[in-house]
Image (tube, rainbow, N blue to C red; front, side):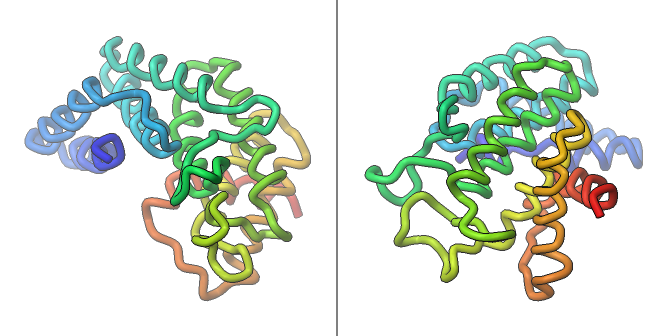
Length: 223
């Protein structure tokens, strides 16, 4: 879980906005801590979240230790994503059910998007395409509805976990804007509609919105 709780973004932003040296030092401490994290986390968010943070820190500082760590994390994603299914296969509540957990895959997309923006690595884009295809093939139960888990007993009624739509939509939106692939734009629009137009009671937490901007940009183009 330490991989998830290390977040240098907010403190770095505060430093860039205010020049506060204490914020910079605290952000640096979090970032350095990630250099020692175990890259072989068995959950998508344990890999995706630190990938997002080390990519941001490398972009800010040019310290190549963080680029090397990002490449380690990319190797983990490569190993855990099943190419035929397009899912980061993980356990969620039961060893008997392995597959995609949509909101965790969204955090994985957060890291991969930042890494792809930083490096232009075509493998990162390929993995993003696999993940999007796998989510819509395996975790989508109806239009704008996604399961919470491959483990049936912990899914929400109706198979919908609304807060994951922003992450899934962000993934689809980024792919649409990066590749021009129409189905990705349609997926982004679907997720947008599921949150904004059809579900006024949708519960969205701030940590599930880091890539929502890509969904909004794509949804504006796909009308």
